[in-house]
Length: 462
Ligand code: BES
Ligand code: MN
Ligand code: MN
Image (cartoon, rainbow, N blue to C red; front, side, top):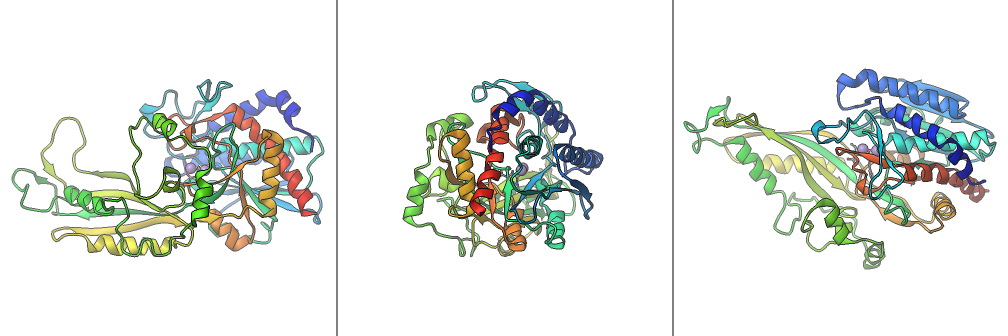
């Protein structure tokens, strides 16, 4: 495979313009007000896949948002790569914290991205990273170098739990048959430290509701005499961690995979500066489970976090009130061997158990998924390693990530193939946050590296 560099250099402006067009469509899957835009994005992705050289592209209807499926089969005897990505994005809120509107992409230079970065919701997660694959395919087809078969499956519900994709995958195993799954929806350690993501955490997401009196009450007339749902909820939440920041739900750690001392030592070799980490986040200290390093806390250990909490009066000025209800959204990140359905049950039982008299508690499970780890001796991993060596001049470091792409574990179960996670984002790209961005350098480096993966995967499969 010839280096894609000259082709990228020649077409760079168009590659950026096309991505910018895609980023202008607010494909927010969580908010039904954007339904039209989500559907419009699927159409746009279809068109681009056709232009990039797919032989056939379909919009596959599902009970939820459609899946864009495209393929180019050149020879049934050759290996098949299945590319997965998502065209939906997270809600951009809070809007006032954005320096420029989330769906009006702009290119700005930053310290880490002196070549410029595209600022827009979805620029890195995952429109930008998904689109690298479309442009890599364009390069290979337009220069007659596609070495194997390729299938694309781009969904519109990743940010809300991929439930339609689960339905689609179980129904279309034959259509989706492949030798390896390739995804760019994660990150790398740094621009000069390429890495391949070898693990994703699982997830259990729940919403809780605490109800006290049957109506909002005057906090003077009733305060101190009835349970205040917000006071109770915060106390219950606080009790979910002990003083060492271990999670107190009985049975929560029962199935947690323990890493050997050697594995932990190996992990600790990855370059990491605690000082820079704190500086980037403006914090004076890190915080977390006793006995584990920062990198362990955010990858190989399970966690429990409140993602949102509400109730009572939050308008201007003061209102003296005891709210009837209080709510919270809670996520638990899980590690290999923990079953997300079992953990959800354990949470529910425990949370109902610790509710004091005077309130009623409801736990509503949302979605979840299993964790994933991929071995580093597979064909796919080796091919990815060689691809990075070619384009970065360095061997990539295997790294387990703290994020989740729940559908990956399902791919392995249903399609029986390994997933290779070639992410090109940086932690500082602010995915899910205001001012999300994706470095132009990273975008183009992805387009350059992906064809090499195709090449080495095909070679190693012989
Ligand atoms: N692309 C992310 C996951 C990710 C990001 C993994 C960076 C590793 C490194 C994905 O779009 C995402 O946000 N997933 C959700 C889970 C989903 C069920 C809502 C997550 O991790 O919160
Ligand atoms: Mn993503
Ligand atoms: Mn995401």
